[in-house]
Image (cartoon, rainbow, N blue to C red; front, side, top):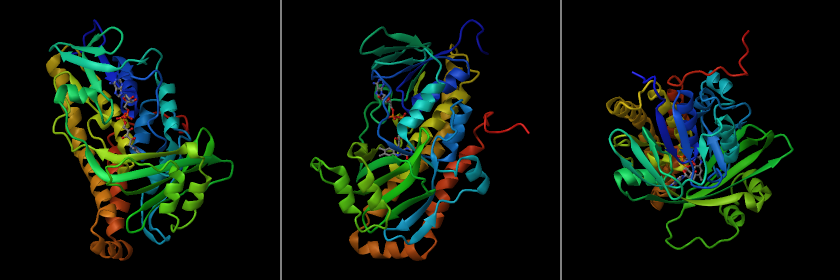
Length: 407
Ligand SMILES: Cc1cc2nc3c(=O)[nH]c(=O)nc-3n(C[C@H](O)[C@H](O)[C@H](O)COP(=O)(O)OP(=O)(O)OC[C@H]3O[C@@H](n4cnc5c(N)ncnc54)[C@H](O)[C@@H]3O)c2cc1C
């Protein structure tokens, strides 16, 4: 039973996609919520991004404007020379409803839209979480500066190196995938197409999708390959390095890389952590990358983080924050429904990276023969990957959206 005396209170740690989404969701459900970010501003971690339909639907339900958030990207899996191997297929109705289904955008564009929807006073910048103590009937949260707070619930949305996760579950090793990714983007004034391409040769992936950002269109691209060296990456010109890796790939990828301003390029080593058995402990839980960090091979880590925020708020909608048993049950229901989704996505992305980049050299021709001449990739990627996100759509409520006309 909800106490009429006061609203339940929550401290969310980390203003990335997971934290922003949970803050929007809990506020919508009547919680008194604060979102604590360590930096003096909300910073997009990286640049390039794609979103599947389910996170787009969750954003809408959370009151975020998704109109023209990204460019439609009808994406094919291809061989490096352009031969089509498979296609990410969406049901027509889903593609129509969600801007093609799979959209390309700049990460900051997403953050900006989410921040615009966040009520004033929720976001607390320059608050680095440093510790907590769960006292049974409330949690005390401490920051590196400023006063501690006392709340009913703490949600750790503080990313792959989550301090909240460490505080409740201790440390666990990162899993290095033996891969690195270089990516970049550019916007232009010329009309763009709707084709996205994920292409591979025997060891390298070279991909691109259309993007839309604040009314302008362009492309993002990325080049991904095995990277096992323990040595630091010393190449200063990421664009040049990426271009050398894919100079034999079908156009327009090499041209896109040449067109990219150097300041729009980044490099990442790919890491995650093995799925953790339990997320919540007492009145504290973790969501997003803090709970299930996911390789970019899924293009779904941010998407699942957004979904997490939506679903945790849904479970906590009518919860009395002072009732410990009820709160703990709601947190458990949330993770029990999310783990069967997030676990296979994260694990699948890890394995896909292994298949494309770590297959032993003698097996690669056989693997590529199978990719080129059997329905393997269509079944296991082209159909299976969109199906994972489409399965979430029915679980997310429709939001009244301005582009749906009453008549
Ligand atoms: C190269 C690359 C490409 C990707 N492409 C895609 C894609 O196309 N589609 C997709 O869906 N996903 C993609 N991802 C995955 C996606 O970036 C992550 O899954 C997503 O950012 C996770 O969101 P999050 O909110 O859980 O964590 P984060 O985005 O890491 O945000 C965590 C926040 O917590 C803050 N924080 C950390 N510690 C503290 C502290 N102690 N106190 C207070 N605040 C703290 C951080 O400053 C940050 O703001 C990609 C990832 C990479 C590396």
